Length: 74
Image (cartoon, rainbow, N blue to C red; front, top):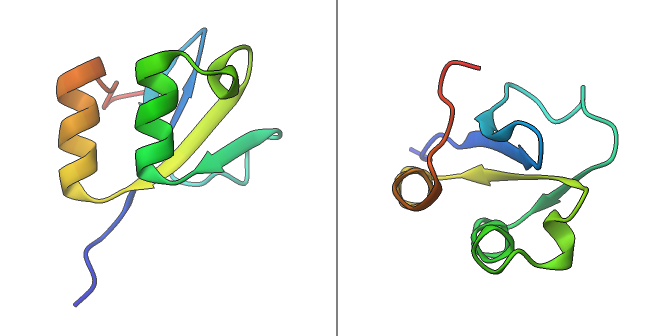
C-alpha cells in the first residue's frame, strides 16, 4: 500500500502550512520534497516572493516540521 502524501505550501506571509489541494492557489510552484526543503534551507530564489508547494511523505513532513515548523491547523 502506498504511503499517503501530505500537501504543504510555503510563502513569505503565512510560513509553511498544510493544504488539501494545490488547485486553489494560482502560481504555486510544486517541487519535489528535497527541492522544497532546499528552498526553505537556503532561501533560494524559488522561495522569494513565490508560493512553493510539495507533497511530502511522513519522513519529509517530520523533517521539515522539525527544521522549520509546519502550521497544522491553518
